[in-house]
Length: 157
Image (cartoon, rainbow, N blue to C red; front, side, top):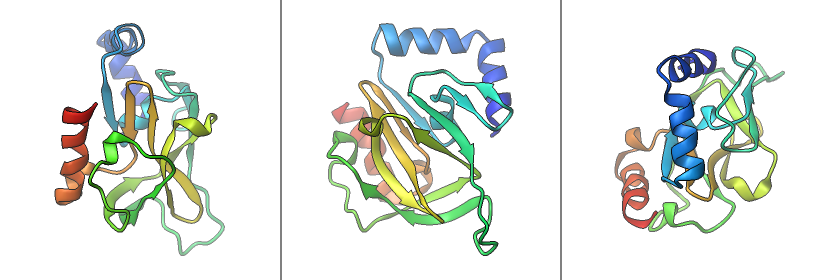
């Protein structure tokens, strides 16, 4: 997905305001994956536009001087847990998860960071603020261990 196009579609369909209202005011839990997590931020370099503003963060592009690191980051990678959270109940830290992205989230509040992952440098791979959850990786493509995260969201959150 593309950040600017994603925001355009949410706004054109009137979904951006509805999402923000449901999440912020009604405290409906939300789980956002990959581009969805990026859309939670206040702004993005991708399309130079604002996001939903649900997480105090921005979305920035990977930029490596080491040309052996390819963009997009595609493949399996591990999570480094920053805090205990029900989203990762029964999840072993040795598991790898599937990523495919060129941009990543930079949180302004460390308390919002659930996990980080290293690809050239550490980047935020999962966030949580109150009823808001997001993963940069794709749990739905990460086999049983990824499905456990989705099950945890439904059962524990």
